[in-house]
Amino acid sequence: MKLALALVGVVFGTLLFIAMMLTWERPPMDAVQLGYRGTGMDQIINPRTAERVVAENQAPEPQPEMPAEGQTAGEVYENVQVLGDLPDPQFIRLMTAITEWVSPEESCGYCHNYENLASDEKYPKVVARRMLQMNMHINTAFTDHVAQTGVTCYTCHRGQPVPSEVWFTDPGPRQAGGMAALRQGQNLASDSVGDTSLPYDPLTDLIGYAQEIRVVSNTALPQGQDTSIQATEKTYGLMMHMSNALGVNCTFCHNSQSFSSWTNSTPQRVTAFHGIQMVRNIDQEYLESLKGILPDNRLGPTGDVPMVSCATCHRGQSKPLNGVSMLKDYPSLAASPSTTADNSSGSSMTQEAPASDTAGGGAASSPSSAPADETSPAN
Image (tube, rainbow, N blue to C red; front, side, top):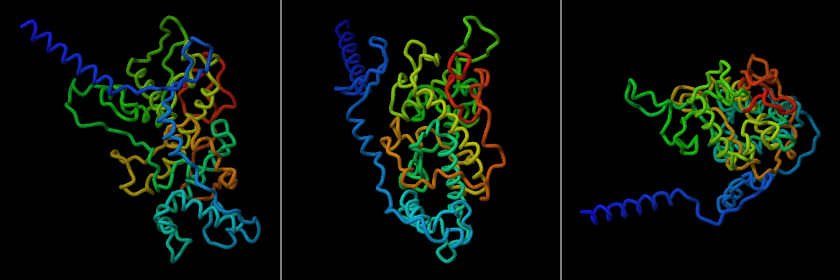
């Protein structure tokens, strides 16, 4: 009997060990030191994964240059509400590029009626107009995040009418009611949180509703703060999402000795802070404005419009498209966005940056610099 139990234990232990091994990444792994030695400030990189991601994120060749001469697009064509000041040859060049970036299979007919190019009867044209404004807004208002590299339609779309890395509010699977339903979104192994047991939808509250991300107190003893364990787990879920989206470890932004400390964080945390504000802004100001325009088949399970997150652009890289700037080939996408187009949001694009950790999670436009101490937002 004892021998049988021992054999069962050996078999069980072996199977458990094999199951654990299947979750490990095989060596060799690369490590890049980011801080003082012996402090764990390292980036662990799987060279095989890195090679694949680099290959998947190649920027397309730019369209041939066209002269900045002749009549403007607004003079030649009807109903050009955003790019009307662009010389006609460059306008056609940009339209050709957008077709390649967004609808290479459907071509121009994805947005336009070939019999009447000025018509807005196809909803993708109305959406594209709003997205052009969003693109220009990002390149002019959020240089603290995108710098001079900027973004183009291709940064998100990658040859698809709808970017693959968008998100919707996830109602979760059907489950029992009562106490059995109080799982706080945990233990569902969602890809949005790196297949962990953390709450599977941190984006709706922390990005969509711009709720407080900071959960670390500035005081040793409770001072009336009511941050819950569930809120903390949701913050960790968002951090896992960002880590996967950028293909980096926590120490890419945070100091291993004190994750909440801004003064000891890496410069990349500043960029990430501005990125969070940027994503919140474009989700609220631009994508929300598409309600009533997108058809039902483009909406999420709860009827919401597709939203963007870090993954929409980054696709597993700290710098999208291997850091290559496509904006330099299409500088018109860095012009000030037109406010004459239909469906523009009525709310202000400019808000004050949060000044303390009591406002650190609110939606705001990018401040000129990151917080310097622990009284500042720790996103």
